[in-house]
Length: 272
Length: 268
Image (tube, rainbow over all chains, first blue to last red; front, side):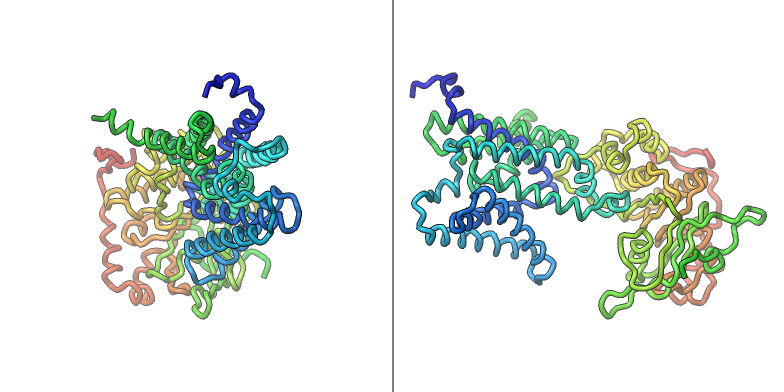
């Protein structure tokens, strides 16, 4: 391949991909940190799987796909909350049932919809290099909303995460904060689907924070570093995807994982 | 029954005669709570006043923590009322906390989670509880005694009128326990705040407690420590041995230890 890096960066499709991926990685840092701290990664995964059901329902009803994904994610978060309180099954069983049943329903409904435009692989593994300007605007809009809410409620969210009871006595509405976090995850998952696909969304949310944890000493440091590592993974993954002709979503996750591994291994090597 | 009850039910008269009547901070009247069929609390009356230390004792499962949660307003009572003085600020020290190991958090940042003031004030609070050197240590790496002091510092930063402590010396070694209780007593005396604490360490807390409330779903007995320790209801619950262990604390120390273990004269 003899396209130079400058030409590549100047290409519209690549610019869109870089912008959307980086924007997502920026909020995935702090949001993913909360998912790691609150042990919610399976919850995020379940929401991601249900996004496919949202796509199918959107196609069948003829409504905007991005909107139907967001709505189905929020609806699933709500159902989860009810089931978790009412059911005699443990949370991880409830999550396991919903994650895979919504994915299966999604695949079945997509097959039934008979729509020629459906590319299942794009939904499962993402199609970052094919996003258009409308997709980009959705990503940027949602990311901006999530970022503003995260910054506004950062301290309250963090206090709730560290010790819910203490936060409540100090005057924080902890139930509202827990709900806010669920909504933020649902929104992020909904736009991340186009970028890395339903099967890989959680990894983009939790691998950069897990890598950042290796060196961070403060929560804010971990969140910011996770954002930086996420953006790095998006750049590396996209370049790798282009030059080695591999799918972009998995390439980004591979890059993030290599960063994580090197942060674990490097200190061990340095100590020898 | 909307009015605040006078302090006669439980609070009793002020400790020293001639002192002005203490300000009522929080009062509970007829508080009851059930979980399904099981009645955990029944008809509890309790008054908490500025400058007084009330200790809640009782066997495991007696409803102590439930009562405290109701008083704090984070659990609802089925019956009775809890009234807080308008604008009451409560500092709460929860039972030993465990922190998620994936969350990096220094002691200083932990303090500032619940407090919007300056870094200097946070450092002063650490100084007050004797752990100024721990400012940038990870909370997860603190020892049992240090962590309890960190929690106390966070509670004190709110400049509370009332300090509520749920087994503050849990996970602290024996020598550290007496010191921690002394610290709590001193700080509260200095600031004039009221204290409610749950404690199993009868022999350690009795000497500084103004009133003991012995709880086993209802208030079995209450009063000054020496009264309670001879009360038949108390002896019934804890046995004569517990009463004897209270007497142990009547000896006086001629020295204390700092948290680092150095010996220092009393009162320094």
